[in-house]
Image (cartoon, rainbow over all chains, first blue to last red; front, side, top):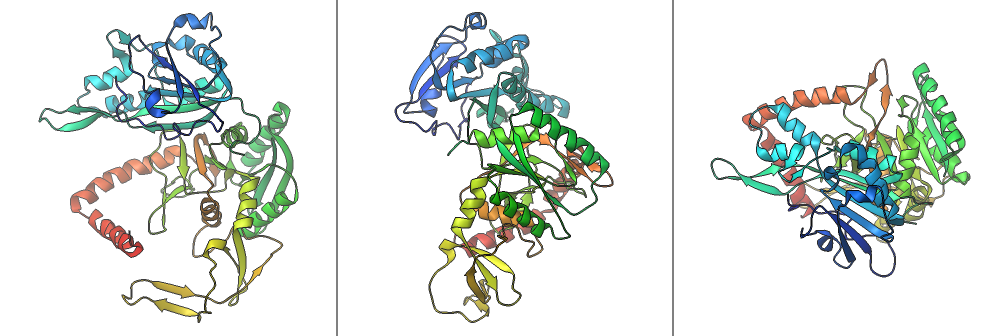
Length: 195
Length: 291
């Protein structure tokens, strides 16, 4: 799935410090096109493919200002989601931010409950695609719970457009997935933010 | 984090309120993340006076934030800690929980401002979202100290000659010029004009008018407009659902029921074309603003 219409309002601002931001972008597979450079054009971007081995050996990959995981966490099984987020949090410097973008399970469930035709895009929000099956699901509230359990403070939590456009039977364009979840967690800040 | 709790009291508090808030404060102190410095309770029939007096006493101390809790609003457990987090990470300077009107349509006491200056209650959000608004009720609201201090720096207070009430005016809106005669001045097209009222000052009141019941609006709009004008952000954490206690406690489900009914009503209105009236009114305002 692609992140066509997604824009993070806080994205370009980053943290207030001199020098380039250090951003780690976590991808789901080799060769996947990232979106971090588009969001933080001035940043130094490092990319890594999700590795479930991190759960046992987080390694020392450095301390980042930002970590972006767009549509990644649903590939981790529910029992290990919080552990994985803890690993990522350990790679953040103090005040660093974890940006999570995820499919909105609540939106998909609303479509199903509403009745009528449920298209494959809606089902993909729940189950994923062949070869990229979802092993966990999220609502904005669930993601916040995971961040809190991982010791991160929530800075932003909102729903945004997905930006995937499809055609209906009459060839008319329409948005097929209307919402995704965007939550930002901050690694322990002492004192008031923004001075 | 050192926080004062401010309660603008004007009712007899329900047992449910005290019996929920008091244990929560004990647990809060034990956890130690938020240090409650003072409990400032001011009670009279005038909510704006009560709030202003709470702020006066808060500013006389040295706590870093003021948490307003209304005497008919029950915050959920750990509410103040979550609100402190929001301010601490720099998401906003005014952070609020969400609570719902005690009467139909039970809308959230959190608002967006329309171009014509009127407010519309928040309606579309998923529980757990952090939503930025233009105005919010003070039932469960944490305000950073510098918000009050900056408002005092950026606003001057004048006294209305007609009735002695106070009127804060942003310093950028104070311009030298010929004294205007009191009354109404209309532009040539007779649709927009100025209401001119004689004032004296600036004055330095002992109790600064951060909140004011004026023009049939609640006192929270008065404060929020000044805070927004000074560049501060107001965020509502919709995960923090408070109970609004009256004869019955009102919550999100009450609001959702009404919204579902209104959804059917709006569809009917669209069919009848009545939305056109509202669209035209908005257009008129935009033309008036020159935008």
